[in-house]
Image (tube, rainbow, N blue to C red; front, side, top):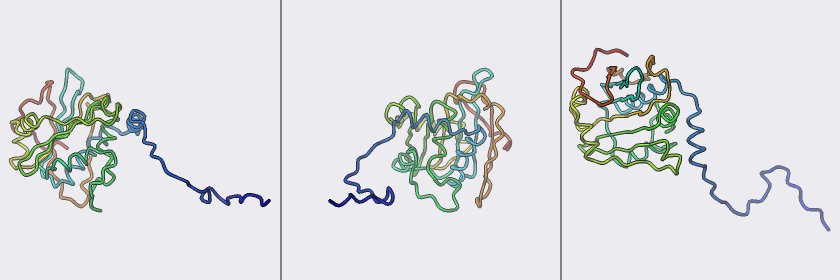
Length: 224
């Protein structure tokens, strides 16, 4: 009898079939949450998305409950997304066709940065007059990648809020909301985004000492 052939390497081992072994949603979310973004890096990542969308005005709002930042809202007047584009953007590792000059490239930054520091990430966007919203609640993501669909009227109401008129009067724009901040140093974050080859937009910051997304007129002086 001939001795069986001994593979020279694992590459020589025959594969008889393939099976899909999807990652555990809970384990994947927890792994993403441990990547270790600092607050300023996480916020800058969202601002980079606004810059890639050709935003000329960006508003960062720190919403307080007492002395604790409970919500961070980033709004811009950039190009909005269609519902299909929004759905793709909320995907972990989204393939959104980034240009080589874009600041975001791999489709993970906004989600991983948010999962590491807050309990819920919501994106409301308007494109050509159509408004859509999606939200990742960490609990729902861990239970099976269940992304929430925001009611259209509620999304429209937020995009039409009086304080948004200080940012955009166009039929585009985007609002990103990080709810339930788990990082304790959000209060003292110093945001420093990289403009790359894009013109530097006007970035405003405001502290809102309320638990609601109340009015803000006019925008504060450029502070970032």
